[in-house]
Length: 66
Image (cartoon, rainbow, N blue to C red; front, side):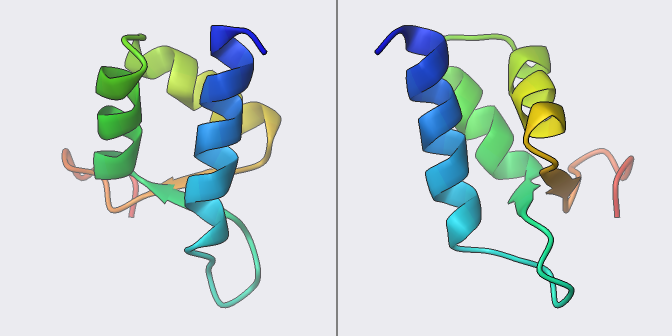
């Protein structure tokens, strides 16, 4: 498994723990930044993977996402 697949797998495991009441998968901004640091990748890569898997970024540290 390459680095990008490992990252996608880690993101999917993280979102299994937290879902909105409507069942949509979500990842907090803090989790996204932690994953980016851990996998030594840019935060935009985390965002791209989230978009591909219909994962919502929530609790944005900058207030961009509610």
